[in-house]
Image 1: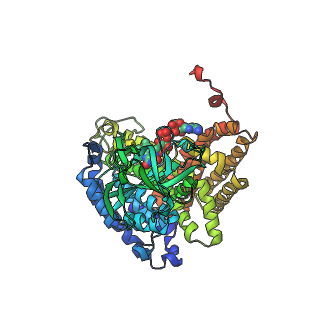
Image 2: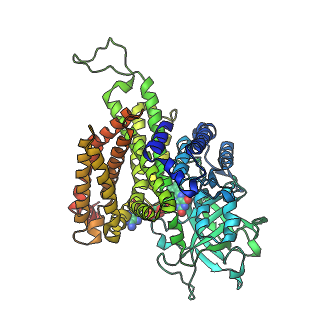
Image 3: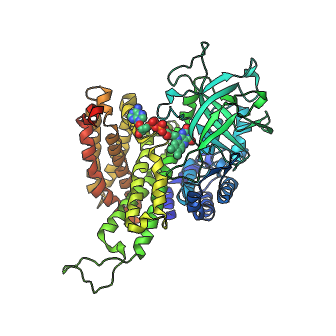
Length: 602
Ligand SMILES: Cc1cc2nc3c(=O)[nH]c(=O)nc-3n(C[C@H](O)[C@H](O)[C@H](O)COP(=O)(O)OP(=O)(O)OC[C@H]3O[C@@H](n4cnc5c(N)ncnc54)[C@H](O)[C@@H]3O)c2cc1C
């Protein structure tokens, strides 16, 4: 995988050119390589050997605290000491000022070694959000402690009754006393409510946990404002702190109501948290103390600010699980003898069995995994590069990158979640019966990966976002810009021997995608268009991946990896791209069977 990462970063995305930008001027290809080396080593030593252990030794609650394996503590410590929690931050505050593209690539090693132990994704997202929207005091007290790894962070959006529909959030935040606005850490509130599914919501890995909580401030009539407009954002630490960031010794009123026992991803706790139930009484009163971030009613806007990176992070985790399964099944297929080759005269039982990698069908399954996992890795790193462009590119580059990310982020999140999960299923298949046992790692990869179509916006919600909003906003500007980029690749590949045929196929696919988008919206009735949003997402994703593969194939010419990359590209065009016809068929004719099916007919 390292070879592929290096090839994509250096030859395809040309990350060296980022060093021409003032923010990254102190960096070079060498410093980037040093970060990748360090992360690869820590992942190999502190994460990979314990991936199965954290799966079998689920987090436990002893009534007072949550117990995690010692290996998880060691992994967190090593990750924090690597400086990766502050990778993107200014050097002036102890950060590395690393481009996000390199940060994402470096984090990929941890996701592959043990997505389940996880590392700092939530903590970094939490602290970055505070750097964008928090007050200087909030940044100094909370974000800095998170960058140092002393404290960790969570994102508390979901509630038992409010998952996909955050407008139904019912956690209340009421001003804490008449002087609530005078607190040096920000306007102070008392929160009451329940937050469900909170990852890393309780543990002893760090001395404090910084919860970022979405809650509604009641109006003068005591009622909560319906919809998302009324949602604000609050910092609610597990342990109370003073204005200098020192622990006061008091517990905040945040209580673990229970641990969720998951299908996979068991190395990270998942919690139901009760805020303000009175288990603890900070300042002598029930109610979780929370300091507001940003203005009232702007909670979701602040959260969405971090969405691109959070979703690329989820896509990358899904990708790396796909990669882990690919590598495990490839190694197995090379050494497992079984069956004899089919020859012109049939099979010769007198011959010794061959390694299963010699069977075309096994190679098909390996090629599928390679095309999914390596293609997804390329897409995620491309999107990460766009994130860098939004921050450090010139005005035109930044504007284009922002627009492209609008349409590509739902794909970056969803495509690997679906297809790298399929890759994990194929990895199990390559191992046959052994793949279905816990003696081999591939079944865990599948279980761990199954989460990714669910969290950070389910598959269905991502699809609605893409077809309902992203491709139609600004008169379809995002889709048009993407089409321009795809057409440029088609144009370049059209003149290259061996690539002209896929280039033509991609041009035709792009044309069909555009036509289906129009047909879906031809009646202008959202229920009709959006009933088939998921097949649209699938087709859109496959077109984006076909484009990615063709572009990667162009860059691979003459490179040591050319053979494998071209074969994976050819596989994708032969086996995968044709699937879009079925998906776009139902989209274009606004197929109504799912929409009109009656409840009582099931
Ligand atoms: C392991 C794990 C970790 C998580 N970590 C966190 C975390 O750290 N912080 C946090 O806040 N949340 C977290 N979540 C919550 C996660 O984001 C939610 O599970 C997700 O948003 C879906 O909400 P739900 O489970 O209530 O499902 P629902 O919203 O009830 O959805 C159920 C099904 O209905 C579909 N559906 C719902 N509404 C619509 C609609 N309008 N149109 C079409 N289809 C629809 C969905 O696509 C889905 O298939 C986590 C979840 C899990 C399982």
